[in-house]
Structure formats: C-alpha cells, structure tokens
Image 1 (cartoon, rainbow, N blue to C red):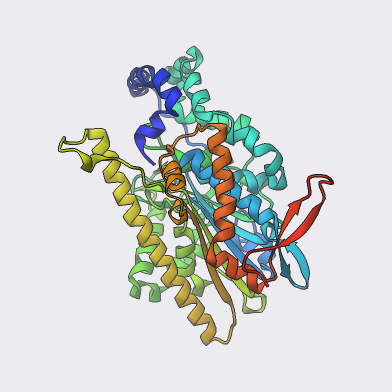
Image 2: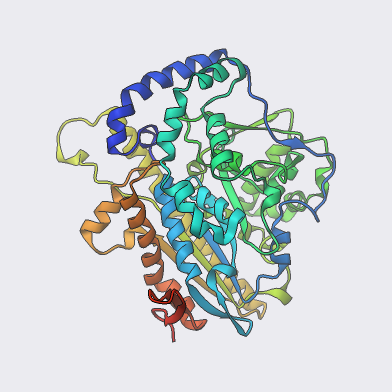
Length: 483
C-alpha cells in the first residue's frame, strides 16, 4: 500500500490524471478548511442486549460443525480484492467430509477478517453469498472504481456540496459504494445464522490501533452497529490517509450500561493485567469508555494497524478464557483451518543501483513498505505461536483438535518472471481485465498448492469439483495431497 499508488492509477490513467489530481487535491483541501463538520452517522443506544446485534456468538448459532475455518483478507486495493476472490472460488469448488456428508469447503467458512482492499470482497460475499460469483467481477473488480471516483471529483455538484455541507472525498466514495456495490445494506443484512461472520477492520487514527466493525466494539461507545452502513465501514477500512479524510464515529459512552457487555466483563478481569498483551488489549479497548477524552473516533485504512487482517484472530485467541473464540467444548470442531490471503508485494525499486539519492516519494514508499513488511512478519509469527499454544492447551484438556494454516502470497511463486509481474502490480482500485484474471487464477492456484491446505484436504477427503464443458455438470477431482 503506497500513497502514490492510491493517488495515482494504472499507467495509462496516471498520464491523464496526475496533474489535474494534484491541483484538485490542493483545492479540495482548501475548501474543506471552510466547510462545516460532517455529522457522524452512527446511532447511540441506551441498553446493551448480548442476545441481539452483530455478535460473534450469534454466528452459526455457536455451532461451527466439524471445521472451524477462518479467512484473513489483506490490504492491497483491487490486487487484494481479486486475489481473495480467487480463493473464494477455489473454496467453492472444493468438497470435504463434514458430519457424515459432503459439503463445499466454502460453506464451512465461519469467519472472514479483512482490511482495506480485502474488505470489499469480504463484505460483498458476506452480504450476497453465491451471487458473488455472478456479480462481483462486474460490480467491482472490473469496474474501474478509481477512475470513476476521480471523474466524479470534477462534477460541479461535488464542489458545491464540499463547500457548504462538508461532503468530502470520503463521503463521495461512501455514496458511490453504497449505491453501486453494496446496495445500501447495513450490518443487520448479514446472515449470521447461515453465513460467515465478517469482521471489517479499520485503524483508529487517534490511538493508532485496530478498530473492528463488530457490536462488541460498538458496545464500548454505546452505539448500534446493526443500523450502520456496510459501505461506510468498508470505506473506513480502505481510506488511505491524506487521500481520503477520516470516517468519524461519535462516542456515546455513558448513555448505556457498558458493564452488561461481554467484552467489558473481559476487560474487568484482574488476572488479565498479568499478561502484557492482554493488559495492552484491556487498555486499548477501555479507552473508548472515556467519552470526555475521546468524544469522536477517526478511522482510516485498516492496513496501517494490521495489513494482513490477522490481528483480529490473535486478539480473539488472547480472549479464549472468556469464551470469545469457541463457545463450549461440546461443540468443538475437529479441525481449525486458518487461511491468510496476503497480497503484499515486494516491488523492484532499483534504489541501490545508483549513487543518486532517491526522491522523497521513493524514500517514503520504501520506508513504509519496510515497516509494513516487518510488522506483517511479526503478526505471522505471533499467530503461529498463539495457535501452537492454543493447540497445546486444548490437548492438555483432552480435546483433540487439529490445526492447519495456509498462506496465499506471491512469495511462494517459484517462477521469477511471474513473481516479478505480481510484485510490480500497483495498489490501486483500478486494474486491467488481464491483471484481474491473473490475480484470480493466482488465488486459486496458490491455495491449491499450499502445503497446509493440502494437509487439511488429505485428512478430510478433500476433492475439487470442476465443471465439464459439454454438460456444465460437475464431477469430483481428487485434490492434491488428498487420499
């Protein structure tokens, strides 16, 4: 994720728009300095009901079946959205055994955590299910979203709204996503009973930490997530700082009794203060209960706090003792499968090929990529250690649960030319049809070849289902590594 790529476009569009965009950005920044403050769109509540709202415990009615499957979709613009879409296709076309019957592995997915570009795919699938495979490419992946948004910036109506109503670039993006992608759906429209629990993540700019669009977080600010726009949450998750103003929430803490919230009861457990990570989590979440110090919450791109989308899972594992990961031992799955879809790139910068000092832009991009890569590696190591600890803890309790992890990333591509191709794709909301096709195929192929995924299929009689061209019917094909 780089600011220059987000402000720019694919190569042909960059030539056309760069100069105009630079002057327009300066103009809109000046206009926004004169505009009124845009009213936050979240609603307050006066009571917390743990039986209602967008809550993890309502997902699948607490019964995850034989397989608890967790997906994490990273940031990376359309690159990440297309790669994760390819993974969904592969899961759709893979069957496994579950409770004595054959099921699509896609239907076993229980939780999708996402940031930035990955949030478009996660939210769309969470809302529309299998419609995703007929509509999503047309509605989003091949739409040329970035060029459309930039074109709208030059509409005189936008300038008028920007000057007199604080209708900024972020609000414009929300309106477009709401009308043309997410069909004005709210979190109440997610089908928690039959579909996966979608966890869209942004970054709280005020305290530099992850903020999740789940009712547990909204409990802390006495707000109702069910009535909140999915498009607004996705925009917050993908709002690159400076290019897009923040998405703002109002903190209504004090208007309800937050002691009734399950997450607050976790916060108040004194033994958590003995664990540095749990203590940090307590402090982070408790800050939202101080309305005087934090009357508003400013949200930006989730990739700044966790570009892999995996921290939601590591935080949840931290809270296993309070029952936020698995409800009861009587409904434990036989397998846990974690699939990380990582669209991180390692572009060829060429800075070290010349004695000339790099430009400010090149320096900023290289610095941000280094920092993100280091943080991503730390996140992956943390998750690995937490899963091992969880597996050991459950084994000690006599609970036999198998743990499997898989990573879909360009780093595992062996062909040098192909790896270079993907690593030099920009972080943008506009890619060519060929680039989208390549990314979708890569998502499918990389998941299929991942050793951890193949191991999961091997112990669960995994098979790929492919369509026969002449009849359009499907037939099973043994998956690689399956018995």
